[in-house]
Image 1 (cartoon, rainbow, N blue to C red):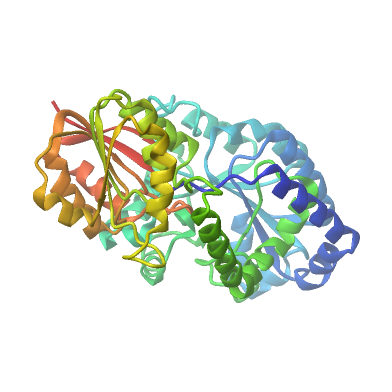
Image 2 (cartoon, rainbow, N blue to C red):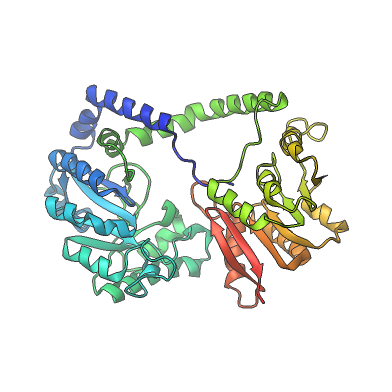
Length: 464
C-alpha cells in the first residue's frame, strides 16, 4: 500500500483559485467574525517553512489574538477566566518536533507569539539526537533555545505509535513515559499531550483523565473550542508547511475540513463507483498499466533488494506494479512466482487484475514468470523451493500476516531478504502487519532484524 499521495500542481492551483474566490466573497470573514468570534481556534503545523510561517503570522496577528495553550486550558476549567479571553483567540501548535522548528525563532521573536510544540522525547536522548537521524528532529540544545524564545513543549508519545492499536499498558506508557522523559530532559513542566495521528478512543481518554497528570490533549478533529469543550478532546485546524496565505485563511476557518466531510458523506461513494467503472473499462481494453500500490521510495527498495535475485516470490500481486519493478533488476535467468487469488468482479471466471498484470509483465517474456492463482496459505502446502527474495503484501491483519510469515519465511535462504509492504495505511496508522513486525522485532529471540525501510515497507534479513 502506498503512502499518502502527493498533491499535483493542478490540485494546488485549483485550491489556490478556490481560496481566492472565497476570500473575495468574504466567506472567511463571515466565519471569523460571526461563527468563531466567541470561540477559540487551535491551528496545527508540522514543519513550516520560515518565510511561509512569517507570512501566515502577519495575517494571523492582524485578524486574531494569539494566546497560549496554558491560558486556553485554564479558561476551560474556570468560567470567569473564559469570559476574560479575547475574542477571536487563536492557539498555535506544532507536531513532532522537527528540527526546522528551531529556524522559526526569528519569527517567534518578531511577533512575540507563544507556540506549543508537541514532540517525541526519544529523539533527545543526547545533545546530538539519535545517530543516523541527526538533523530531523529537535535535540535538547535546540529545544532549550526555543523555550528561551517563548515556545513551550508538550508530549506526543514515546515512539509516535497509534495508541488504539497498542495494549492498555503500552498505550499508558506511551503517554506517561513521554511526559516524564521530556520533563527530566528539559527541566520544564509538560502539561499537554497530542495524540499521534489523532488516534485515540475511550480507553486513551480514561488514561489521560485518571492520573496521567496532563491538563489537556489536542486532537486533529476540525472545529473550534467552546466553553464546554472537553480539555482532552481539543479540536484543531491543520495548516500545511508551505500553504499560501490564501489557502491558510480557509484552513483556519475550517472551510476545507467542512468540504471534506461533505465530499465523504454525499459524493465520495458515487464518485468512487464512477472511478471503479472507468478503471475496469480502461483495464479491459489495455488503455492503462497496473495501478501501483507503492510510493517512489518503496519502489526504490524493491529495486535495491530484488537486484540480481534468482528465486523471487511475491504474495499479494494485485495488478503487478511491484512485480514490474522486481523484473527490471532480477537475474534474467531467475524465476518469479506471483501468488494471488486475483479476485475481480467476475471472479473466478475472469480476473481483470490478472489480465492487467500479465499484459504489463509481458514485456519480460524472456523471463520465467509463474502466476499462481490461489491463496498463499494453499500455495505453500506444496512448496519446496528455496527463496532469496520474498515480498509479502497480502492479508494486512495481524493474524493473516503472521500466517503468511510463519508459512513462508522458513523457505527464505540464509542470505535472502523479506520485504513487508503495507505496514502503514495511507493516513499513517499502523496496520496489523506493521503491529506484528513491531512485536516480532521487540522479541530478543526473533532471528531477524530490520535492515531497511521506506514509507510503508520494511526490509528484514536473518541475523548471523
